[in-house]
Length: 106
Length: 106
DNA sequence: TGTTCATATGATTATGTGTTCATATGTTAA
DNA sequence: TTAACATATGAACACATAATCATATGAACA
Image (cartoon, rainbow over all chains, first blue to last red; front, side):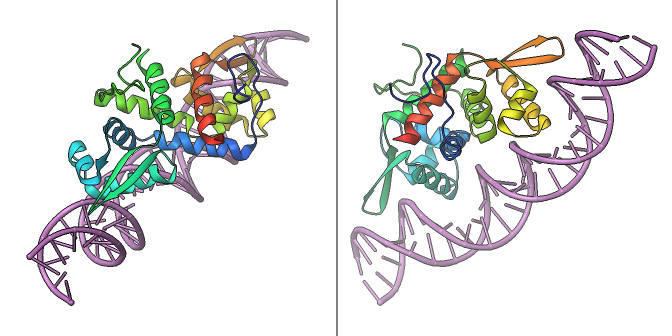
């Protein structure tokens, strides 16, 4: 069994600390700018400027939000010359968004 | 295929409106009180007061947050006499939390 | 009907958060 | 080293939101 919160009625409340972490994680997904950034870089890594251009938003706005994504280990960073390329960290991230989409679209 | 956001690199940005809805959905999960409520009622339906007692929080706090959960169709409501019983709406909700837990606990 | 109990709601307050502007940091190339 | 470029950061502001207190709504039952 992967964890204590499975669909087959085996629910047990995790420690408060874990619950706070969990809420914090979802908070990161709870902003449309960050969601759009995640979609934008889900196929391919992209530089900060090209993300900003793709979303028609300020560079600093994107940079601030990328930091949030970074701090929560949702994106990977790679420097190449002057540019810094961001990509989604793992398929976990995609799956969480996918789950949410299923609920929103149903 | 369920939607456009699958792990096998078939990502396409949904409409802005959908992205806002998606962010709003995750916003609901982004509060520890609401997360705790969802855990509390994940096994069994419970009245507002008993949720408040279980979490040692004010009745009105719980009531306010239950409204948020209700508005986002994350809980089911059933009246029985004076009491109103809340339960999780579907296993979708559990799965989203489970996904998040996996990421937090890894 | 009137009282009691369970829940919901409105107003207020404190706190958190996203964006912007200005500027700093750090890299490349002349 | 200096200039040009890409990114990050700090401060300020506007806005959103969670908790609390007080009170309203609505159901049950004497």
